[in-house]
Amino acid sequence: MEKKLILGISSSPRKGANTDILLEHALKAAEEYEYIRTETIYLRDYDISPCNSCVGCCAETAAKGDADRACLSFRDGMDLIYPKLLECSGLILASPVYFGSANAQMKAFMDRTEGLLRYGFSKYKNALSYKVGGGIAVGGNRNAGQEFTIQQIHYYFAIHDMIIVGSGAEPMPGCYLGGGATTYPLRGRVRDAVLQDEVGLKCTGNLGRKVASTIGMMNK
Ligand SMILES: Cc1cc2nc3c(=O)[nH]c(=O)nc-3n(C[C@H](O)[C@H](O)[C@H](O)COP(=O)(O)O)c2cc1C
Image 1 (cartoon, rainbow, N blue to C red):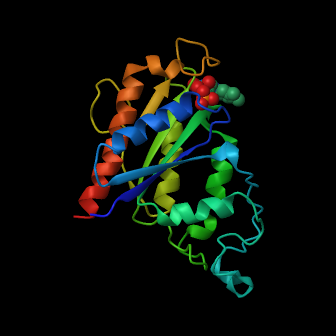
Image 2 (image 1 turned 180 degrees about the vertical axis):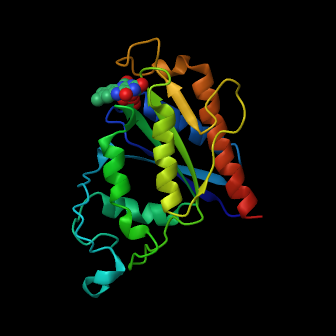
Image 3 (image 1 turned 120 degrees about the horizontal axis):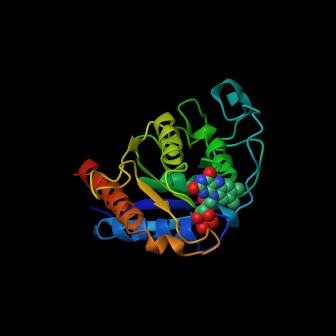
C-alpha cells in the first residue's frame, strides 16, 4: 500500500506547548504503521479570516465559481490548507479547551471548510468525506470541557461525512472519545505540563493508532 497521509492540525497559539505535544504524540503513534506518513499544520502560522457567510462556496452561486477555490471571499492561509485536506486520508484536530469548548482559531478553520461539503462546487467538493477523523483536547482543569471539545470536533467530522474514531476502551480510566488530557496539577503556563498526564498521553497515543489502523482496514 502506498503511504497514506494523516494530517494533524493544532489550534494552539502557543508553539511547542501542550496541544502541540499531544498532537505530535498521536502522530508518532500513528507512524508505527508502516503505511502511514504524517504532516502537521499549526494554525497560528496562517492568516485565517473567519467565514463571512457570503455563501459563495455553495452550489447556488456556482456561476460565480472557480473550480480551484473552496472559498470565494478570502485569499488567505486557507488556500494553503485546502490542498492538504484534499490529499489526506486521515485528519486529527487538536485544540486547547477555552471556556469549555474549542478555541476561536479552531472554529475559524472549521467554518472556512463549508465549501468542502457536498454542496460545494470546486474541486474540493466532498474533500473530507469517508476520511478518518480523530479529536484531541487539552484543558488546564480536569473534566472541564475536554469531552465537549472532542464532541464538537466529532460533530464537525460528522457534517463532513467522515469516519469518526475514538481512543478505544483503554486506558481505564481514560477518555473514550479521543485524546482528552489535562495540564493539571501544574499551572497552564507550564508549556509541557501534559507530559505528566499519563492517562491523557495514553489515550492520545491510542487515538493516533486508531486513526492509522482504520485507514489500513479501509484500504485492504
Ligand atoms: C481563554 C482561556 C480559556 C480557558 N478555558 C478553559 C476551560 O474552560 N477549561 C479548561 O480545562 N482549561 C481552560 N483553559 C486552559 C487551557 O485549556 C490550557 O492551559 C491548555 O493547556 C492550553 O493549551 P496550550 O498549552 O497548547 O496553549 C483556558 C485557557 C484560556 C487561555
